[in-house]
Length: 397
Image (cartoon, rainbow, N blue to C red):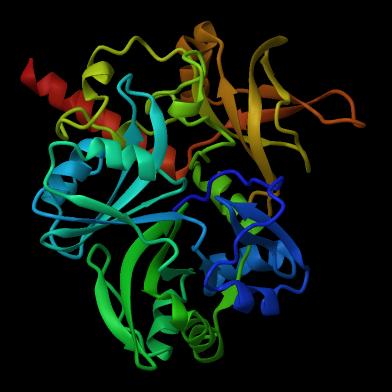
């Protein structure tokens, strides 16, 4: 569950179902907009909110995410084509992550698919895709409905999430299976989700009951709200790329800007043996990766998007997003490495044996600071996938 890049230039964002609850709790009064919806950046203190999510229980308004109900006899087959998630193989209550790709195999967006019944699915994505989905429906016995304005969505994260849900009278889902329950007479659907390295639960319920559920979780469950700035730290620590910040959606990017799953470090979300999803044919014949997003630990207290990343005095890439990590006591950053020779040679050895890059400090500071590639929860999943894939190839020889 990754929020897309903010759109702060929007002058009149729409209030989510949880807007009034969030506004009452927002002491710092720092807001932005995401997908045209109001979103809190900071409720009180970024570090405090980060620690709540890491050690306690945090809640977040997930209303700005794009959310679609997909119904019909071919709903699973349609989603298995429109995304790389194994939708048609999901049992009722199960969820899976995936990607939306274009015909070139370039990434449009991230996606999460949940099967709610034999012929009803929930599709959640960071960015809206109503028109794309309607066009892709041709030939399928299925219908797509944008339900973003009809429901409220609340994320509950952290090690205390299950206890908070239980205190609120909510049945908690299993690790992979959703559950339904009642919170003070309000019927809710709960599904397990993952935001960066944090496991959690997403509650989806009628829009008019938003305040009831929020108050039940905060008063009885002891949950505290967190904003986008705290989520940004958690996202970078886990190595999850952010649409609009670390990469441009393929349908908005030039040919030389569009990126494949492997270039984003998300090859494990688009395995070529998963089925005939859109873009699969192009990925089979894709050339070697010519650039790649990597996560860096930078020995400084600040950084800047666009800062040059260099190795042995030569520029090899640039920073795309960053945040100060209280846990690591240094900056966590994404960098787009676009030097093909460095990608093929020094970078793999550096990941195995250690090594040093340098990042240009933002003004008014001068000079460069050391940085090194680090393994994250997301890169570990990709590495395990590629190793298993390589082992399977060796066995077939």
